[in-house]
Length: 454
Image 1: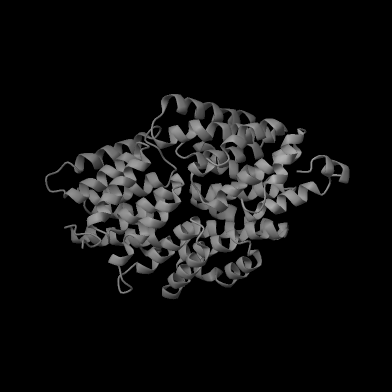
Image 2: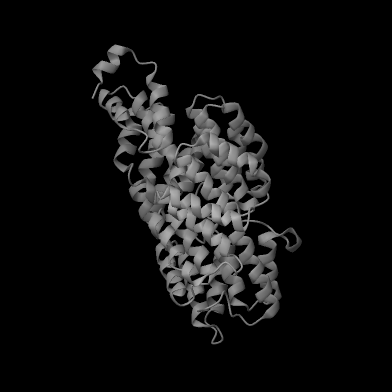
């Protein structure tokens, strides 16, 4: 059946197992130096242990904060891993792992998932291949694959196996992203029954509440279980983001700002992880669209992501980094992001080069136009790509900020066809859309509404 690993160096194997547990559980084991420290220890224990390099490099590239295109040290690490993978003692399975991480590092994310899926055909309990593939589908906006990657292997697992409960949380998230909300909730609760500190099952529940517009339930759930999930540092910031979004959608903006100040920004500054930084940018931008004065909070967000302006690893990150540049009124940096994105389209390679060309450039130019008060131009740029924004990755809940931005641009545009466009959108797109439309149409006179009636 193919267990988790059959690697030969016992100390390195033990360290590698601890890496996988922390990665799947989204927590840092402080006694081991956290996930990063465990990765370093694994490689130091046996520098020739190829899977140690696979785990370390895989986590690095899937963190979406470093790219071999700009980072010579990472490029060197990837090349060393590839060299070790050529040893005669390396198994075919290990070579596939090496190849998958190399492909991801080179920007070929879809190709990397094919290799991991190939591993899972014969080794369905390979949690590393499973988690890497699952996370990659999230970055690519491949919801059915996100769901089915777990569904295919679940029959080969059972409750007695370590980490089984975490698979339920992963499966629940895939179900939710495919709009199977009832099944997602049942599955997430099963995961929490096994381990109430499973922050990813909590995360899946948070998505169900969001997508069904159950904001009060979401607030109560996150509040009542906060001490269970807030120690899982790699996902806690994002769970607080969900907590904050519920409050925005309820109109309790002070509570949302309080969560931003006490948890989200503090955690983003400490970790420096782009997952956390984009959450900070997203929440502030949503608040700003609601007319909330966020004061000078944008500066901290910008400082946390300014070193990533030219990365262009995934378009989802680019758009949120642009939010931070614009929010902090960094005109030159905003221009540099878009200019280097266009250069990446001309000279780059991989999945994100194509996505950037088809969606990333018009999306970022649309965001810039909106911030410059060019609302009609923002609509003209974003409306044609609205159903392709899914390809930039992230969840439905995360991408909803772009739906709301488009609708607000249409409402603020002076063109009557744009006003009609805005009124045609409804809560089918997202729970937040109806709220946005009703709020911004309140100021229109009866005459204007009749003139723009459908």
